[in-house]
Image 1 (cartoon, rainbow, N blue to C red):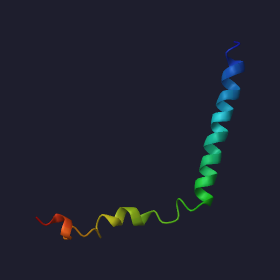
Image 2: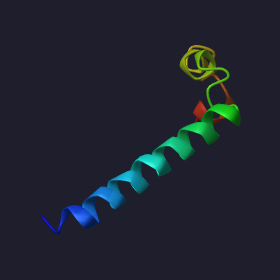
Image 3: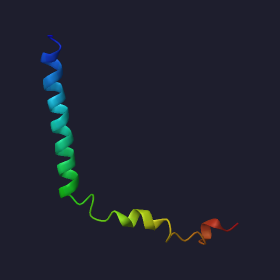
Image 4: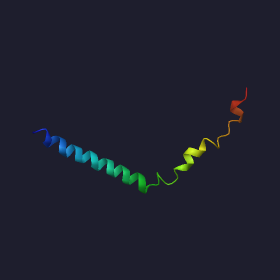
Length: 53
């Protein structure tokens, strides 16, 4: 029973930290353009000088 005195505040701090991290990510533009990363692979040009030997 005494372990609950440690685990409850620790879990609440963990939830608070996750909430702060999510709030920071949303309001700093981390989720503004989610399609660009997925379509960047399609726009990749592999015919550059690095591929020639």
